[in-house]
Length: 260
Image: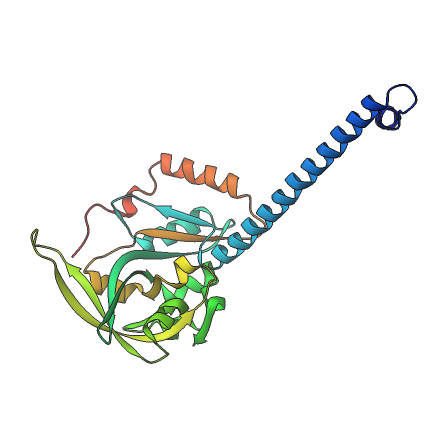
């Protein structure tokens, strides 16, 4: 059937004896469709390659699955234990984290960035953050001790920072409705990472979860990042998660109020 269709199309294209105008019109239509199809395929290939590159860059510091509970805090330790018991075959490891906004101050130059508190002992098993560190110790456990932080290379360039430098972190204090009070905490640069995406490299920093919670005076985590074993059917695992949530087995692992 394919050969017959091709044969008929070829004969119509090469048809010259009776009506040259029709033959010319068909050739123009054919080559127009060919050029249009080629342009469409080329744009799809370029777009697909761009999306694949962005996905690979994001995959480096983002987990495969992230569990969030809006406006509530999660108990990372107990939730991790439960997840490994319920989904031992599917889950490789998981790590808790929290996000906050701070102002960094260096030599009277200030800028607003996002700081992410992570669990250094587990983060390396969930994301590829270590492979993105271009300067400093790639061992996250050693790089994020006490008040040490890892910053994006665009932040380092903007503030002329290097490994071992000390910067000031300004954190808004709650309580006043008319004025904003800022508390000041010093932090040491222990690492510089590069993802390749400006939104991350120019506005993101990492610290230990303990330092984050003490800085923002809170307990628990905002989200749980999960790394899956390979091979693993993610859609099947998500349906199992939904079923587990439906049974309310996660209920006891939520902080109903932010602890102080």
